[in-house]
Amino acid sequence: MQRQHVEPDSVFLNIPYDARFQALYLAYIVGLTELGLKPRATLAIPGGARRLDRIFELLQTCSYSVHDLSRVELDRTPPPTPRFNMPLELGLAVAWAKLNPEAHTWFVCESVDRRAQKSLSDLNGTDFYIHNGTPEGVMRELSNAFVRPVYRPTVPRMMQSYKTLGRLLHTLKSNSGSATVFTARMFADLIAAAAALRDKAR
Image (cartoon, rainbow, N blue to C red; front, side, top):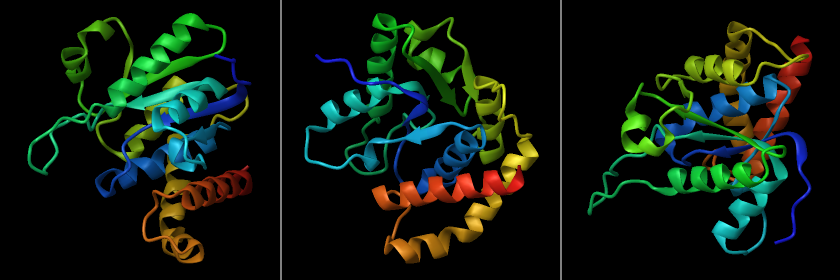
């Protein structure tokens, strides 16, 4: 496999795309952007290539990846089924970083302390970033994971941008014709809006 060009400061986001996760989804976009990083997600990739191939190709282009395991749980639709997509993508990142340690660094986030160590005991010894299922917790843990030399906003500053973006959400969805935030257009618009808020505050 041909190695992809690695984009500096790019972060592969391995998170669920559903309404219950919307608040944390927005927090990840705002938090990473405030820290001078570039969020990347598979929903923003055009084309009809096999999903797993798209995920792995995108992962290879990113300097970092953030894997949120807080929603690896049984869903509400019969039959009850755990969500394995996030652990699978984490496994791809771990393997990629093992083979290319200079090209990629991965981080694992959770909402409940020590739960991931129980469900994925092979990761014992790994530092987990526990956000407690809140946007403020996401900001705090991203700031701990990515200690930046230039972009070092306070958590209250990041939360201010988060709240402002929330107030812009209706307009952004209306402008894009999107019924949900989980579309390629909305992902790009949210990043652009978050970057504008960051630059305005500097």
